[in-house]
Amino acid sequence: MTNWFYRQNHQDLGPLPSEQLIALYQAGEITSKTLIRAADSPIWQQLNATDIGRAVGDFVETAETEDGEILTVNPSRVRPLKAGYYTLYAGLALYIAVAATSVMGTLAMQFGMFRSDAGQMSRFMLASAILPPAYAATFILSIFGYCGFVHQAMANLRHLGAREARMKPVMAWLWHFVPLFNLFKPFQAMRQIWFGSHHNAGRAEPPQGVLIAWWVFWIGSVFVVENFDLVFDRFTGDSSLMLYYVGSLGMIASAITLLIIVHRIYQLQSHEQTELTARVFD
Image (cartoon, rainbow, N blue to C red; front, side):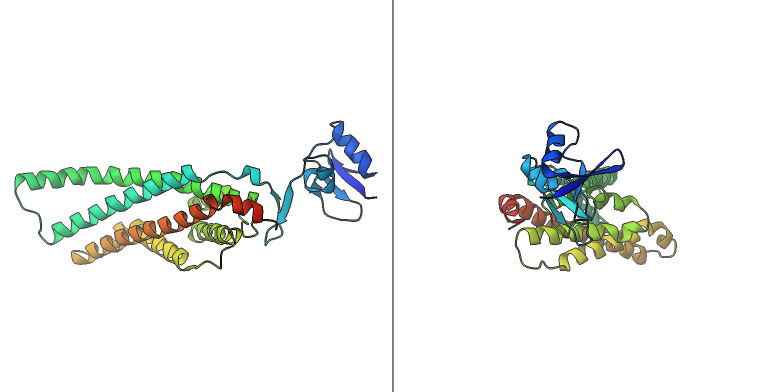
């Protein structure tokens, strides 16, 4: 017969036999979230992750991450990725279209492809006025979609007990806004989601090339864009235009590779969701 300690009001109480602990639960004196441990074990767990939880019909599985963090595994809390996925997909697709239009327009101006008539110039001025707010709108849409997508994707993996999902869901996107850490932490988060989604679906070791390409394009293009004014002062003419092309094409390449990544993750976590839930603790 196993005896149990339980923690209440910052005090360790017990040991009690299983029957008495179950009686406390049924009387409402302790809950499914109460920390308990077997007398012969140093590990504290929530009651609903132990044999006591199983006995009272309030049981959820647990899993351990690669860092030793105990996850409460509850497949019923897995949520669809549709909202974040479609928002991000729309934002990125529109951003690619706007950025490509801007690059092609700049190329046309550079090589004198525009006629000098009033109609052509009028259309050019209209495009010049529309492109900046279009850039901003698509970028903001992409940010909202990205944050929602990576948050839910990481949360789903943790609910399913994926050992790779070491990062808290909120930090998976919040690191983007923390200086210095935003140089590597978001890549780590996406890598955990990428590998966890593949492994939970029973797929072979996934390729990392697309992840590396996405992050190299992103960091490189952000550096060029953020420092364009500083660099522009040192370069003129074709040199400054070349920097513009490098930054813009880098952003487009980053958006395309991110589309590939999120689409694959969406497929794994959506179409394979039933199989994932059944397979986690086979």
